[in-house]
Amino acid sequence: MALFALLGLPLGAHAADTPASLALSSHSLGIMALLVFVTAYALVVSEEFLHLRKSKPVIVAAGIIWILVSIAYHSVGRGEEATAILRHDLREFAELMLFLLAAMTYINTMEERQVFNALRAWLVSRGLSLRSVFWITGLLAFFISPLADNLTTALLMAAVVMAIAPGNRPFITLAAINIVVAANAGGAFSPFGDITTLMVWQKGVVGFWDFFRLFLPALVNWLVPAVILFLALPRTCPEPVDETPVIREGGLVVIALFLGTIALTVTLHNLLDLPPVLGMMTGLGVLKFFGYYLKRRSLNGRLPPDSRAGPELADLVRSEETRSPPFDIFQQLARAEWDTLMFFYGVILCVGGLGAFGYLAGASAWMYTGLGATTANVLVGLLSAIVDNIPIMFAVLSMNPDMGLEQWLLVTLTAGVGGSLLSIGSAAGVALMGQTRGLYTFFGHLRWSWAVALGYAASIAVHLWLSGAPG
Image (tube, rainbow, N blue to C red; front, side):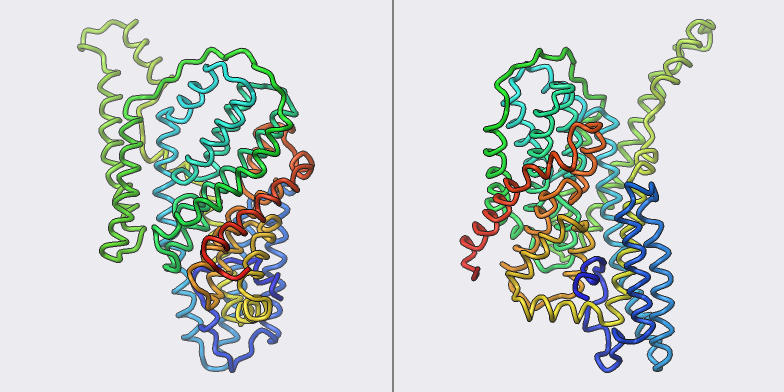
């Protein structure tokens, strides 16, 4: 039952929201809801084979589960309680979705302004050795992912590796593993580095500055396997690739606006206790104003000098418009990962429904009371290598176990870095398998999982040592 509950995802409904006297976990409707969720998540896990977007089954499952919840609660005269739990879950989803939508729009705008391509071009034109590329891409992945999401960071660094050593399977495999581990580890010590850390921060169980206490454990998590992988690298220096790094107009301003938005978000949350989503959405509004400025600039730059312009100049203007259309901020907004956002909706409501039936209360008692907080939190990280860490962290937050800050930091760490144990354990690993076109594979990663596991164990040991928490 605990495993089934961990396969879900709610920020909202706590175990305490379910009246204990109802004992709905053994109710026929509760069992039916659990089967619906397990079936939906089996389809999610099979996305790579079925080519069925992961949001579709969980959205349908969410509707079915909440119909079952409502019927069960109405049967005992408590229908209003079910509605209250559902509205709470919807509020939690709205805050998370709008926060991520703003962040995704900023990242998409930086991509459109060629910020990441310019960084890649600068790196591939340096004439670095493969060993230098290994360390530089890992280091950049570790330090960029706390601000940009770890998926975007991993894709950027993998593009550098592919451009410098095309077709070099042994190097690409080792470098890709290094990038995945570094990006996931870097995202674990920042509220903005991963969706799981964002959820923990928005939930209020870990303060903004407290996340940075995970810096050293996260660094150890990356460095231990990185040193082992480094010893297997070839000592070669490929020919430099001739690329000129160019950032489009306004790219540096967008970076500054993004950093300013993060600062505003943190300030409003820490000083005025306003939800983080307010700062992010305000920053998105500023970005829209700047997008309007860029659009006007691009349109004015394409206008003919006067009405007497000849047909040749008019053709040239039309050609330029076709090649590089005017900047449109709403295009960057539309490029957000809507499948991921809708997946969050489905899973939050699915597990919120399971919480209403009482399953999360049982899972919490089995794990955090029976096994103990440290063992349970280490288990959460191991499960995240098989099941996406986002639903696992949502489930833990919904269980809301009674544990101190150090244990909340531990589960934040393990959920963030545990996905590196397997290539399918994180979005970064799955994306790199597709980007490298078969050069970095599941079994190629599995061969070195022991090294990643050493880093996982070492990071936990360092955190427990620093915090003085019992092992």
